Length: 208
Image 1 (tube, rainbow, N blue to C red):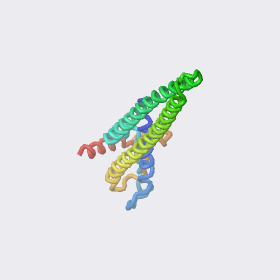
Image 2 (tube, rainbow, N blue to C red):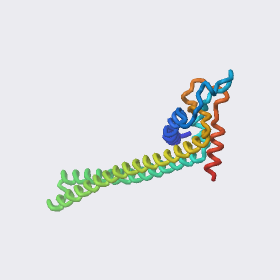
Image 3 (cartoon, rainbow, N blue to C red):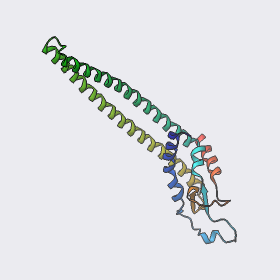
Image 4 (cartoon, rainbow, N blue to C red):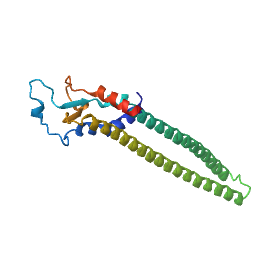
């Protein structure tokens, strides 16, 4: 997995980790208590565990969101790099022209004072144009960054809404009092992981 993919998945993961941890801390309308749910010795507590990484890697909506963000990031990077390289070439050409002007000025190579002043004015104008292009490049960088952040927020919200809608339906009977992301657990206990069930249901809903 490359660096960009890791960054994108981290962004999406941050948006849903809290959802899994907090969503079922309180179950509205449920009259059950932990003691009532654990009447028999050895019975599982009303707790479920979900692996966020698996959700991001296997839920079609999450995969598409990750791919879309990666594509936007790469397009923005290419666009900025292309403009930056073009501007760098112009700057290098300008520097050579400035050095050439200085050499000619020192060698009294200009035929007249007016010709020297004209060349100096041209270089000053070109310098101003380069500075304006540099500012345009910075403005573009900020715009692309803002666009990326807005798209990231929209996709993360879409992912949150999708998962939350399913979890409400999944736990409509109030069976689970708490759903945890397994990243917060030091030890995994068999019987509590419902990740595969959730992924299968999410993909079935999304395909419709």
